[in-house]
Image (cartoon, rainbow, N blue to C red; front, side, top):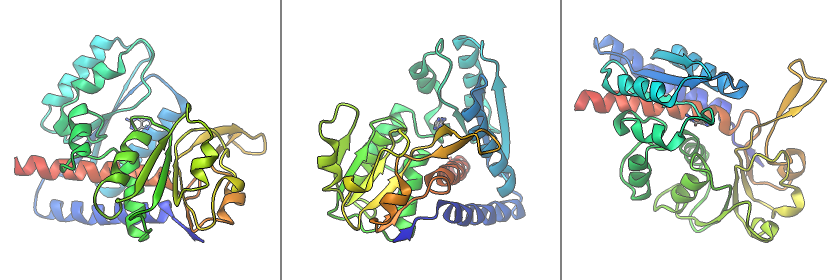
Length: 293
Ligand code: GUN
């Protein structure tokens, strides 16, 4: 069994990006600048955005955090987005999701300039991805593809079951795994909350990518020997023995399933750190494209 070490791999990627940034600086060029917009005080979102900003500092990017109050109106947020679109100093930015309920998420994502959309959430970018055009790929799916690539995990002709059809993970993942290429060339099943007899699919799967958010639901009797497991779940589970009062649980019962798996991502330290590294990679790409434009 091989552990797909997202922490180590993401650090390798960050080192590679840092070296490019250092070379940019030496040539007297402007370094990449990532902005993040956070509306409200959701605990998990605060943690994620904080990690993104810290990662920027570590690799020599400039970063800007726009932290807006919970009662920000949709109009005020859209005005900030227009500012970011117009600001030549910002290469790329993200709007952290979820947004407060009074704000229309689709309207906001449509307002982001696709050339600055380093999350790859704008329909123009999503459509380009689905048609194999070069584009920003959403960071979590991009990170999973990079892990599969760097560990030479076989994907061609394999049965891949993706669990969860979110726009951020499941849907794009299903597209990428079925695309021509390596990784890719898999036969993909996209399972979701209305799928009947999920075990029937998971037991036949060579690769399972789960992004459901139900702690430890995938058990050993649901998978076959040698399976590749990619666990995207990150749920806070109450645990009074931890200083924070919770632990982070994946979708997979790791102790059971790892005994049968060929490759597996741990939680934490698997897909999570890769997401941040690939956001940085997209921002570097945005900077390079802006320079060429
Ligand atoms: N919320 C959960 N994951 C993500 C992500 O990758 N990007 C943004 N912007 N929000 C998220």
